[in-house]
Length: 285
Image (tube, rainbow, N blue to C red; front, side, top):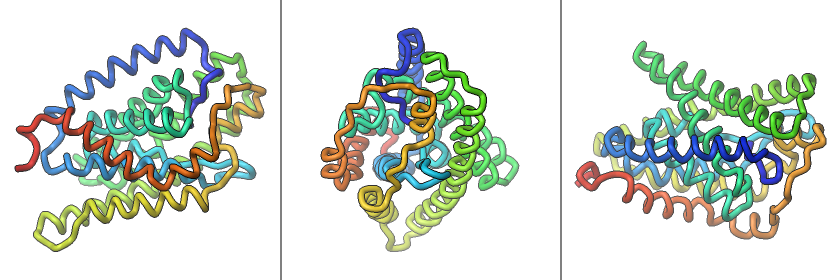
């Protein structure tokens, strides 16, 4: 769902660039006050896990693939404000290092997945959490996160290119629904595992929860190199069948040679980011 360069119009790039800059700056400020001290150490490893998971494309239809977005898992685990900052860092690294999503289109991708995707997941989760049904809330939120992010991305591409083919839209929304259901199931399973690991750690059990998450990130990253589907994702399918050309700046050699270290690099980058975003008074002593 990463929009490449060479597709979006100047008004779309400018409008969402301003919206993303304002939202990310405000999110950084709110993260200072809203992120619990016990959740701060999770930001780096969860960012690494989501980064790695986005590398793994799985088939969602004939010749089409999809991948985890991760906004729902981040929002439910570390809160929406910190989730937006973490998603922004993930998308920035993907764009600059792996050419996954355009540099000029970065702000649109941040808004789609890091702002709309996070809040579309968090609001249902938080509402149903208060009713004692967090799993249902997270499942619904993850599904909505993918669908709303997808609709906005398709709309941005359509408005910029003039491609408004109804049948193509219906097909792509159907494929994104399959992707959303997969995201929902994975998000709930990962959230439950993290809650169990953190609960055992808080109870004094000899288990390094963050080591387990980091190890899972490395395994997922390696799976992304050797096992992931090479089929285009749904947005690329839309571009291909809509006759929309994009600037191809991808480098398969760079992607494959560096992907094995991606989770560790992102973990390090996010750890540095957290030290700047979260005040020292909130960090665990």
